[in-house]
Length: 506
Image (cartoon, rainbow, N blue to C red; front, side):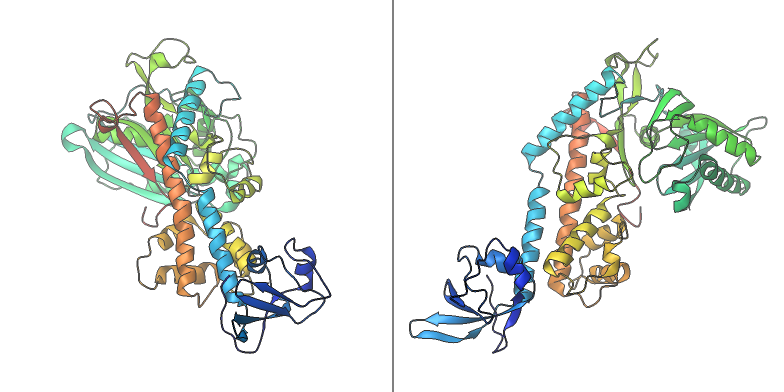
């Protein structure tokens, strides 16, 4: 228990209410003093006196202001001087204790990560066996059995819908020699009300923005005479694919909850919206963003075998041998392989380091019980986890003073780019942290040691996310039999990766 000199004025640390509820303190009207180590403490209110010597520091560390308390240093010559318990130091000890507990609960030792790897590989096998509802990983057959070779030529469009923003891109390809001749893209933020609105509202908005982009097509892009513009549709939500350009929505994630869309063909919804806009385009392929990332990686390197998305949400796909997919009915593809969309955001295992804060976040989300892995590692949630931790510190340890900033209670006000910026702050005075706390929460004049504690929290949450994502990747490699270092293992398997939320620049 830390003590600080504070003159003759006692610091108020315990209230009558605290005494009555505290399991560490017992009221005794016959005495007003007790000894703790080398200190004798006197309560000015005789109604409450003796505390449990062994647990006193815990009681004080978790208490709030109230009953006056004075402490005197005990020496061989008797009591000497006056010392009083400082609420500042005890609050700080409480804050440090909370952070240490969070660090312990988020720990990812190698032994635990190996358990996660094994569980991921097991769930992948189960998902390839059948489409049983009990399977955590859907292991969706993408119907993509060939990947880019670099020989492709012509003008192509792509629409990427997978989070709070969607992107539209056009690219002119020139084959092996020309490769990417030119490309342009635009990124559009989806209004929050459309994320929980109707099917027509969402897809009409997307189609109208797509039409604007097509209308701005410049002279550097050339469509061959007689050909219709082709569009690849990247839809980054769980879909039951039935053909290369057809798939029904299984469920929403990442904050979306558009009514009447579950069970419907998303390509049909987009086509109808484009027709209402008078846009003449052919949707030639429906792919998940992970499949699109894999295709882009394979375009550059034929050794790429898997792709991972770490953005608003998270997912992974990989190249699987066709004969290792028992649920794949009908004729096997001539290529001998199939790209599998794992939908690993819904992965769960008892070995995952889940805190009470994570459970509360999940319970209050729009999809409680689903996508637990995603809620531990993706950009939609990391900032919110840190905000909840900061609120706990503010409430239980007065981290930002006696008054809790109102914005600290606002869900999702702290974003993952915010915590990424604070985590990467290398300035000696942690200026980025100070500015972020002021801009996001309206908290000013934050002491340096408090700023350091905030960075530590960001680090704990980020490291847990990174190590769990790494364990997921190794789980895929284990399923492929490539989880060893060597000519056919990790060293020979390349990964395509994409992120859109972990950094302001991404």
